[in-house]
Length: 154
Image 1 (tube, helix red, strand yellow):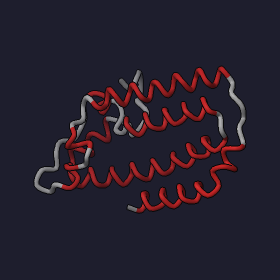
Image 2 (cartoon, helix red, strand yellow):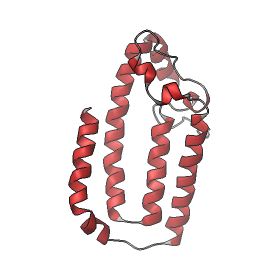
Image 3 (tube, helix red, strand yellow):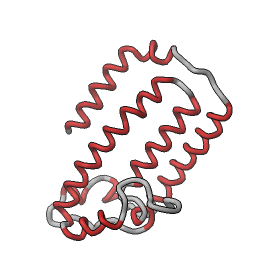
Image 4 (cartoon, helix red, strand yellow):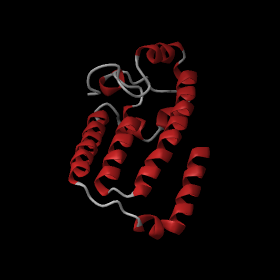
């Protein structure tokens, strides 16, 4: 709720000055566009692969709301390499878009998204520790929060 309220407030504030913010453009540079496209595609492909491990019940947040059936801890596929592959993909894809379009405001948005994402992850970790206890603590010791220790995420 707090993160959502802050996000809405920031979005409404930016909406008031969006024309001025988008008026400043650093121009297109093909090396940045190419790297940006690669990162964007990597983020999208990664999200599609992650979705194979998530059903509609998980995607809509039912386990978080159902005290009688908390669901299961996701530890397979991308979740075996990173505890938060969806957030990682989102940040990678956002960086890709920023590099493609090369508007300074997009880099600022990415810089704002990093601490916001970190705060959200910490809140989710607390909730998962309450739901899964020792199983989640063991998972945290084995799997890094964001970046895999070695190799590819998928």
